[in-house]
Image (cartoon, rainbow over all chains, first blue to last red):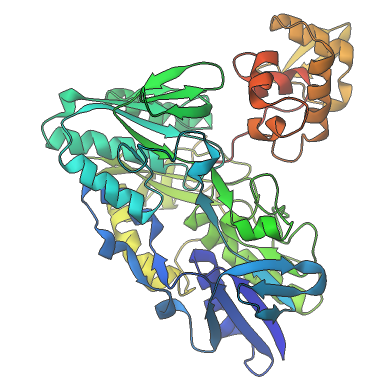
Length: 409
Length: 101
């Protein structure tokens, strides 16, 4: 019996388990997936928790519900990968052998990377919303807050779901307007990027929207430390920004297991061929999603598109053939902009987000780089699609490769 | 794209002044570009520039330069005030780093 081992049962690992089990002969291929947690989080939903739109129950389901019959699931911490021996060591001493390994252990936030971040104000007046605990604590804080300076800061690039902090300030604007205290809340968006976003057209559109909503943008701010006494964030070049409440995207890193395996870069992301999704060092190791260092967004939509490519390439690798499929870096992100509207961006390695319609050229129903009610419905409906179609590896009526049809330069 | 003569060499540069062909780069060119940014290059600058040129393809970040063993992040800011990565890559003659979002 030959073995495929998948590390991580998040979005990517779960999709691959479903796709591969359907395609591969059960007499010939053993498929095993390992994860330390039994709960699957719908991570795009975390954003809505601080504003009381979702609660914890809306974003969690048991992982086991999404792993198909015929796939072994092991809930255990991973000690390390020993790539030269085709082995994975689990905490507690168990050893798993593999013929092919798929690493899908994602990225996580590490507040300890920034001095003063995880200190006395942590989850009292400083919150992240990339963990369910942080999102819930922030909701409790907002429920009775009287107003003051709300600062949203991104500590380091890259980070998971690059539009989330923008959505956060847009939703905060709506939330405090409806609470009747928007005039007492000063919202500031502090980013290491040179503007609201990276690429020119989307930066302009989103920058104008922030301006319209009276949200101040402070660009080129690279966080050095947090001063808990004076309640300030400080940059390496000496800028200081005071806050009453700080929402933070802490430094993102790959899993510690990657570091223990000696396979990561300085942030524990695995050097990966951006087209084939194969590890640059090891022929029989593939890396899916946030765990890799490929230069595109760390986001579920990317993982979803990349999974199609990886599936094709694993079939090639199994047969000893050259890898045929090439990932284009396709990402597709809904951006909640508040008051029941949303925007949408669609882009890849080569093409920046452009205005237009999606997925049908000229028809939509979604508008690219436009601010519409329909885009918001797209995001709302997406949670259902995620649980029922996407995780199970079923087909969605959109192409994995980005298309220029419907886009305007 | 535009043409620009730096240190007597005719170079193709991007709209914001980055060399299109990194192989055209020389230390002389670096000094000229740095002068336009009001930086007088010393040996430490060149150590950093060497590291940046060698790691041009590997997703450069300020953090990575800070872990290079040549300078820490604060020192990197001192050498290239304002936007150290943007400025140092321009002087090093490599493409402007794109943020991956």
